[in-house]
Length: 144
View 1 (cartoon, rainbow, N blue to C red):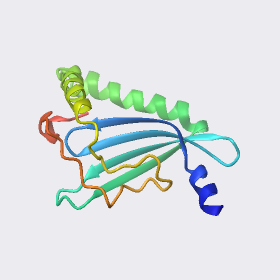
View 2 (cartoon, rainbow, N blue to C red):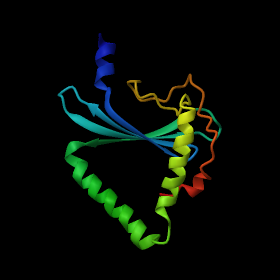
View 3 (spheres, rainbow, N blue to C red):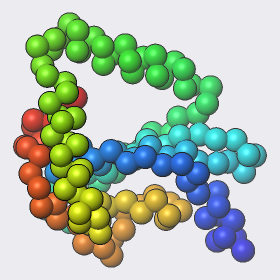
């Protein structure tokens, strides 16, 4: 019973996955608290260079911080786009990624080191790392 309660505690009620290059995937999960409240977890899962699993970093974002977080994120992104790198084609990656995603759907059984049904959000150690067939460019080209 404790295990079942713990599973529900970490249950994702809504989730989005963003693949970013060959080694990185971002997960945006809405989670529910015991008190019927909601918060977000933002997870970056990165395939280790030696092929031995995944490294992950997680941010917990609570509802009282949503507006300030979003305002600040938009501000720093716009600063980079408008002041630091105005000549960069920010849609280029989106176009390449959409093509990659279309191809990736053809082989949807690949693992990305994240199991959204797993209560502790740990990448699965028993599954093999993702073997992506399609090159979307060097990770160095995936600048945000």
